[in-house]
Structures are given as structure tokens and as C-alpha cells.
Length: 345
Image: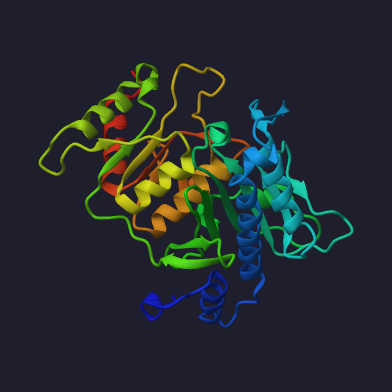
């Protein structure tokens, strides 16, 4: 692991930081490093549009639905194409998978394939685009499991514990890229004056004392008794904690990022309001898995209410799960109350 103390008070670009981490692993080929470079470049291109979306006339709907049945936003389309075009020809990937596409995305036959697969949500929180609320990109990188040839569905449907890297890009008042390769979580802020991501948050760890809980409490009448009991417990002053403050933006990356830096728990449980989504709303492959990898690297924990999300083996590309993510003690309390109140009769 790179000693982040050596960077204290220095100007460190993401390129230098990634390269330094690679040098700590003599067996590394540089392929993973270059994929991370490509995601940083994608972030710069996408943020150039998100910061001037109204002027560029790319706000609003593209007039179609994605595989999730959700209205596709114009910026969604732009982000999807940007990430694909930066990664389809490099020879580093065997396949890609996106929340916006029904099947895995093959590498065009005219290009070589590589040892990794990339999964991504190109623009999470896109329903907030027109309101100028923070949005983000989530990604995860796996080493392929099959030998040679084009990548397959099997290469993508791996438990998140197998991730070799994961991260997110937050497009807000500033643009940040936060990622982990299994050696801590590190955050970089884009300096628009020089067009570079600079190390701003080395070795992020969840604060010992959590401050916030984040959930759409408007759905509380549709939650199970266990989840309702958990929400009430979060609001109470108990010997082990004071009641937490509610903070909810409705943009997953933004809510996760705030709690990562300030401490707390985000959860999106299953509810009975939408019978089409009995297993929850968040996608295991594109959202829950990569963020669960990050939170464990930061000292936290993620669960579907009964088990660690990192251990769930996806059965479908667009599988949904409930998610409780953040401070380990808070998430384990959710599991305990769900066991206590939601046991089958």
C-alpha cells in the first residue's frame, strides 16, 4: 500500500498516485492502471457537459426508456457513449456491462480483448439532472473468469468481493473521483484550471462517530416492521449513540459520498409500494456491489438486511437488492432488527 503520508502538502495528480500504487506491485502489468486512467478521462469529458448542460441543450429526456423501464435522460446517453468509446478499443477489456443496456456489451470484433471486465452505471441520479442536483458515475472492474475469446455473462456475474477496483465520480459543486484497488479509498478533486484530478482525500476512513442517516422516509408506510423499527431506533438517543440527523438528497452517489466523509448510514430497503421491484430498487452489479467494495475498504459494511452484499452471487445482470451501507455498527443493527421483526410466521 502506498504511504499517503509522503504526499502530505504536495500537489499529487491522479496519474502519479495510480502509478505509485502500481509500482508497489512488481507483478502488475499496468493494464488496470490504464483502465483507471480511462475512467478519469471519462470523468473529465462528462463533467464538461454536466457543468454546462443547459447551455449545451442536453438537459431533459432522450424520449426513450432504458432496460429498467426508466426514462433515459440525454446526459445518460452521452455518459454511456463516452465510457464505451474510451474503453472499447484498448485491448484491456473482454466485455462491459451497463445499467442502460439489456445484455453485456461485447468488445467490437475488430479490436483485441483483455483480461478485465468493466461494469458501470453511467449517470446515477439522472432523474435529478433537470433540477441541477449532484449526480454521479459508479464503476467496478473484475478480472475475467473465462479463458480467451470474447467476454461472457459469466465474467460479469461475479460477487462484488471479487472486484479488483471500484469507484465513483461525483459531479457536484466540484467533480471528485473516489476509487479503491483494495488498498484503501482515495479521493481526487478535479482542478478545472489545469484539467487535472488532484489528490484531496487520501486514505478515507469512516468517522468513528456517525452523524447522519439517509433514506427516503416517504416510503416508510411500505416498509417491513423490521425496517420501520430500525428507522425509529436511528432517531433515538441510546447509550451507544445519539439520535442521528436525517440527510437525504435522492442521488445515491451524493448521499453515499456525504456519509463516507461525515459518517452514517444510507439505506434503500425493499417496499410494498412497487410490486415490480419486490427485491429492492438498487442494482447489485452496477450500484450496490461497487459501493459495498468501497465502504469495506473505508472500514464500513454493506448488507441487504440479511447478509453481506459482497458475498451475493448475481443471478441476473440487472438484479436488484435492498441495501444498508455505511457505519458497521449501524448496519449490523439493521440486520438484528430485521431478524427480530421480519422472521417468517
